[in-house]
Length: 131
Image 1: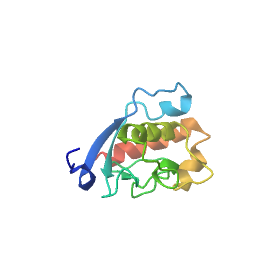
Image 2: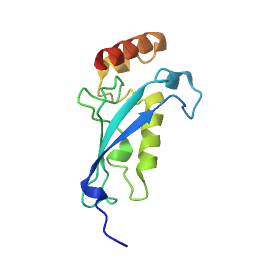
Image 3: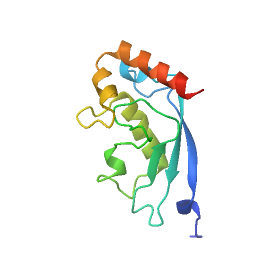
Image 4: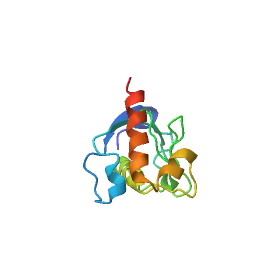
């Protein structure tokens, strides 16, 4: 197999949640919004997880103000069988099913149960960040 330079590159990927795989109402709050993610692959990838961050600010219980994502497969549950597609699908799933027991954004976690208020706050912040 030819050597690849992929592990040393940072790639920006656009994650569009306008067509969620689940029909749960929770996922719908992100419908139509587009987010950019950075993926930095370590030299020992795929044996070590890539570092994935939201480049576009994302209001979510498991995303902090710097774009860091709290997701088990990017930490202790990483496996070398995961590829970029699996990571992106997991992040898309996380958007609709946050882990409110371990939030990085306490305000988003508190609002999550009130989807109407959550969506209002999400879209307000998304609009502010787009300026």
